[in-house]
Length: 343
Image (cartoon, rainbow, N blue to C red; front, top):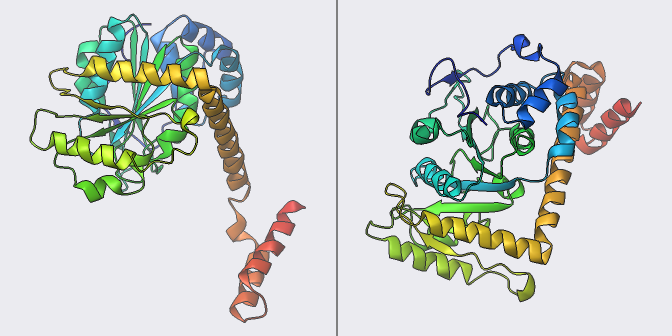
């Protein structure tokens, strides 16, 4: 695989909400898939672009990729802004490459609510891997999708999986406590924390701190790092262990990503979690659940498109008048509307 995603505008680029990329559909999908499987970075980039743009060729792309997926280990990296996700991701890439693994990186950045653009700057922190043929880095804009990911992330993962990546690291936006969508997408979820990001009460709150398979306390050379580890231990002690044979005890790893300290410990923890999942059947359960969620999301999107012009229907106005006048209730009105679309 050739180096990180080619970009005509250099490592820093602003992605518009939508772009017409007709030129990317010129090559046949089977040819693109075949070249991507051979590790051609441009073909991988074109396939992911087709995914991001919801191209009419998307169904053909997914059908072509399906027989070649299921090999890559998906590792999610999440945490609040400022904990060092991008730096930690770069360090993990280096450690994984040292063990001979081919690595893909999907780094999701937030989109502007005003312009729709996004500063795709994560790869700036990964410049040392730009000439490594065993690494593919792709920045993606969230495009308003909540949960810390882009809506197209699951399909982009399939592209990198089929392209021969052994491990795909998914770095989330970093929006805060509710950024839990990554847990349904990754085989292993790594949650990063750092000193000064909150107290023991913060650690006990529901949300992002409940989804981790591996916890990493970054910037461990700073004051307060040991307190963060103690707070995490106390939080993990509250977990339900009614079935201990099915319970994975998440390790807590101390790191200093800026210097690379602790990176091997994180890789060892990720490998340990994979071994545990394989021996307990959890890996297969997670992947089936992930496929189920993906199918559901595609079906719901299709339904939304079908309902896209519901506000233009005169029947909706008539039903709204009945509800406003007290002649009907909103649930009964909604049932009536559903019956209209069922026809």
